[in-house]
Amino acid sequence: MLSTPEIDLLENSTLENALKIIAEKFGDSALFSSSLGQEDQVITDVIFKNNLPIKVFTLDTGRLFYEHYELLSGNNSKYKIKTEVYFPDSKDVEKYVNEKGINAFYHSVENRKECCFIRKVKPLNRALEGAKIWITGLRSEQSENRENMKMIEFDEERQLYKFNPLINWSYEDVLKYIELHKIQELTLHNKGFISVGCAPCTRAIEPGENPRAGRWFWETSQKECGLHSH
Image (spheres, rainbow, N blue to C red):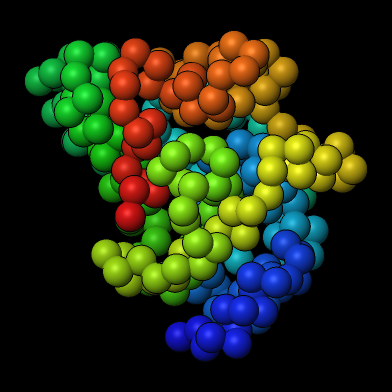
């Protein structure tokens, strides 16, 4: 467990020092989930450049953009460390598609959330089995649902700590780090795609739009898939 002084130290440390503290305390029980977005590329860079014993993994939903695979390959080549990939259960996907249709998520919020559960939430839960702390690239300004998230909190459902080291970073902070350290990123970001999910569920945003406006763009909801709803 983390003591109050340890939590205070994490909350007041630089990104690099905070991740080093996490690595020292939790070792390979610390896991980082990357969606290969800009924030996640920043955290991946810090973990891999410092050879921290934090497992980095990503979820392949089966509906990603080709650019995701290019970047994943690029990361593996650059850092010489492989990001572990988790896939959804093929039986779950087959049942959903055969019963409801390949693009059933367009028809209702319930269908969309079920698809996200099958392709994202279940694989994530499998990836986190045995973990003591889960590191994410969430930032508070990304959506209303994330505005009040803390930097570190205990996830009662999964029985682990959830650490959001970039929660107080601005988008400009992220871009500055990427430029300064020459971080690889999705080429989609240069085409108006800021928050990038599955290909059928993501569009480019217009100037001034919320970054999450391009996610599940056909519906009015909290713009979450269930991974970070707790």
